[in-house]
Amino acid sequence: MNPILYFIYQFLKLVTKISFRVYYPNATRLNLDRLRYRGGSILVSNHPNTLLDPLNAACRVPKVVHFLANASLFQTPFTHWFFNTFYCIPVERPQDTKGKPINNANAFRKSQQFIRNGGCLYIAPEGGSDMERRVRPFKTGTARILLGAAAQQNFETDLQILPVGLTYDHANRFRSRMTVNAAPPILARDYADLYQKDIINAARQLTQDLEQAIRDHTIDTKDKTEDTLVLRAEALLRNSFPVSGAAHFKRTKDWIAEWRKQVEEAAETCEAYLQQQEQYWSKLESAQTTDRAVAAPHTAAFWIPLILGAPFALYGWLNNLLPGYLPKIASEKLDLYVGYTATVQILCGLLTFPVFYTLQSLAVGTWLGPGAGWLYLLSLPLSGWLYLKWKPLAQRGRHRQRAKRIRDWAGLQEERSQLLKATLHYLNP
Image (cartoon, rainbow, N blue to C red; front, side):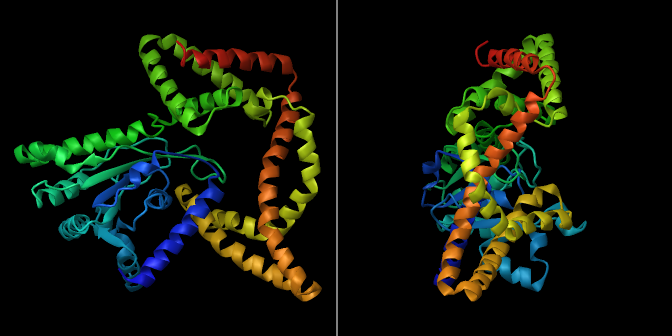
């Protein structure tokens, strides 16, 4: 491997990890030891967040990962050079060929040779991206690549698929929650007998097993209505009974399973719960407040850091204003598909923060001297971090004041208490 390209890859991987920790700080990472495999493999994830999903999965793997990328990305001379140089293999989709027959024979051949030689290849088997907490049906291409490569070695191989489930509470929202959950690997040799009998059926069975593995390791809702229902139930449970990220993920999976069971067995009770939840949330939205503001009373211990931290937060806000808000403005002005919001903001932030930090520090150094310039530069990321810590406290305080202005405050609290009791029913029926 070219040492320069390897260095660039490792540098970009580090930048990617840091970016995810900043943009999604409330991240839960589960079972990542399952991704430490060093042999030939295909890394797979669901695809709810466009360009970030391949990076989110690949940065968890210790070895260099190559990517199957849309053929449309290779159409200009520069992009053709760039994506071929930086670890990508083109694959055609119907929208890439402009009506011509799809021909992925070369992509399959290169992919199979690559993993047979010990490489790790990322594929998103859904074939496209939708910003939903829902796993869409998988295509069989991943299974055919793996089984074809294994068959060339008579299945005397340790080739495997490394499935990763990605769950974003709100994929395009800065500092939202995220869960990365690796499933047990799927071994190609386990499908040897089936492959010998029926190649097509073997590919279908492996695809079904892979899809189910991802579903089991994500929050997989049926549609937008169920997702809204689950997000609200999660908020109620999290605000009343906070647990670790891993425990919260399991609790949500259990809640969804019981809800679906109850929908079949007690539809009227479930419909009543839906109406109860909608009524409560409508009041919160009308008052522009949150469930957390209703659930958590604020004591003196809450107000002290909010007040004492205000001057430092103001300093951090003022000095990080331009580099912090320009990425947001850029994503709004570009008016792209909402799935690109997080990608655009992260990429813009990687440009604006170094540029503005440098310019601001040079200005201070010119005005007050080099020493002051360096001290100011050191203060910028620290003050920005303090502001990001302080801002949620300020929002909670504002939401609490809005909630208490609701005319029937005691009635709202009682309404929440009854809704929480009904929500707990689907954990302890």
